[in-house]
Length: 159
Length: 272
Length: 104
Image 1 (cartoon, rainbow over the protein chains, first blue to last red):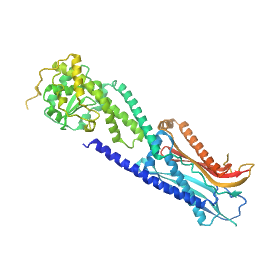
Image 2: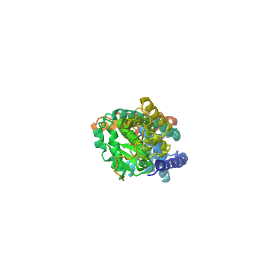
Image 3: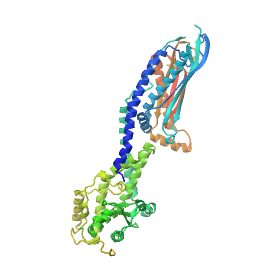
């Protein structure tokens, strides 16, 4: 029979390593992503993006197309552990907030990028959808990732 | 209608450092778990002594077989000694059974359902019947106080709390470890109670307490880390000078004779 | 701040628009509430704990959306949409979005 301390160590040490790795790598990835998001948002802020069902009547529209962008993101081990603790105490799950915020801004940016790439001048009737991709392992617990899908109608205006 | 480009504040993310959040959550949940476990343990302590021994015996019959008992030619004589001692405990509701397990370190433990396990190491070490009698009587003391059940139900309580907290998915070993640590505090108190009862039985059988404490003096100091894992929650036997001193104090208070003739081992056993 | 889920604010005219503003809130109820909801599930009826949870989260999402709109200089958010999703076990996200505009 093995020493219980050895067995507990064997269970706890990988946990700490995963937490540490999740914290360091996850934080780095997140801050890099945010930096990139802010840069691209500054580049695309000139593109009118609105959730009106119809474009403003003053616009002279020459052509339209459906544009969309999606992202699937997942959080690191550390933040997932935090979220797990939060599920016990209740309250705001802050570690998921940044995940969803990043995903949403990324999806909007991709949608805008595809509109700009194709020479459109604005996007109307923008909609955002959120879907949770459940993890198939571990009896469906946990979250593999969250998909955000952004779509809208891109319009070309007569100049 | 004019388009006015704007920069939005990043207010969808709460500005809190993840490490701070982790610290707060761990302290909060850890504290709540400790309080909940203590309350539950206190409650179970109160309830468990009213559980009829017959139920217990039925629920746990055959548990001792899980521990791989071995046949040993000292088993019969030891069982006979146990039966003799139990005659002095009038209210004994148990069908007592003694079994031997193959382990070199001297140890004994009381299992739910009325089984007492002794190791080969213990049988090798004892030098007089009085010595063995006290070890067995001490285990009977655990039965009398229902300590073995309390230990078991405490582990259950802790398992329940942890299971609820972690969704039953993780931390079984952690539970066991926390359980062992929390048992230690209770165990000390239980050991003293069992000692007191056991000493009473020894006096009833032999008329004096001689030889009773001999066994402790042979044992090395045992700490939390060295506890035999299997029996950790059933038998944590703190061996310390205080325990021996406590035994002497009980004997003095009760006015028991401290010394007397020691009975040789296996007097009644068939010749080997 | 005027909120509306129509394309315009009745009786007023949109002067300027500032784009999409969003507000989100991810929340969970504590384990006791989850347990009570589990029991309530057996008999059916309103899960008041969760009603509260979602209402709190929705309010926070609206507040955050309004805060964004205010920072752009808007005085109304039109075409407001809500979406609710379960992003993790026992956690719900409420998301609100609309177009920030200046009306007169």
